[in-house]
Amino acid sequence: MLSANLQKQLRDFELKIQFTVNPGEVLILLGINGSGKSTILNLLAGLLNPDQGEITLNGNVIFSSGQKIASPPEERNIGYVFQNYALFPHMSVFDNIAYGLKMRKIPKDQITTHIQKVLEDLEIAHVKSERVTNLSGGQRQRVALARALIIQPELLLLDEPLTALDPHAREKIRLELREQLVASNHPAIMVTHSIKDAQIIGDRVIVLEKGTVIWEGKPEELESGVSAPNLSNLKCECYEYRDFGAIAID
Image 1 (cartoon, rainbow, N blue to C red):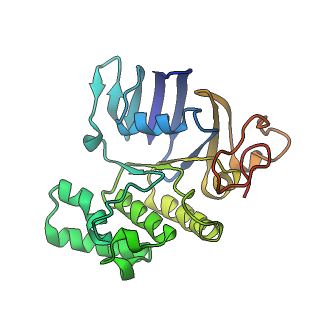
Image 2: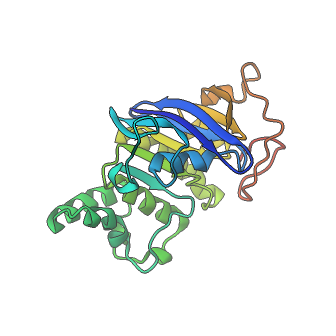
Image 3: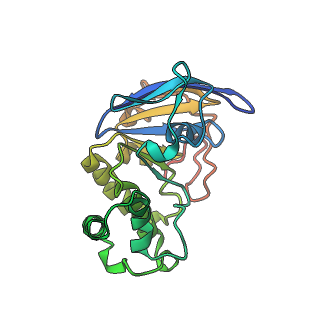
């Protein structure tokens, strides 16, 4: 389980948020660009440190301003799927996925066994020798997810992992991603602009505005008209999602 209490002064506002995510649960962070969503992921991953607060993962304190604990990123065992996937273009699919295991000095035979399984699970075994520059958007997304999962992370972070896909691929990948995240049985946090992403992939949604939680609830409540938040001032800034004057619905 992840438990986080984060406070960080940014250029235009102060980010303040507190939440927990259970094993197998997917928390969606929804909001416009600049609302603090990606900053939260970076704080959890150790790429940034909160000004104040505490982060506990499966009972281990990985950050605490009070106890002066700040574990470096490589010691947090967190998988991170970036928006642009951050794959190594000069490497094959196999070598991209193997990178994290090699850094952990896992024996070569074990690396091959682990990678073959995740390649089969994500249905990309047939492209394991290809350079990632030769892959489709959906295949690259799977490689990025495989690289995050192969290290057996205790927490998965995903920063707009579907925006680089065409609409047809996005429909299919949403369902696959939901299944993969739940099957991993790890807490997961995904940043998105899309209500549809939230409804299909998420278990719980937090809507952010200038670093503040303005609503929290179930994905199906976003358009219920009863307990739904006021999203009239939120506009999608992702060109691949259609703008309906609120959060993107594609």
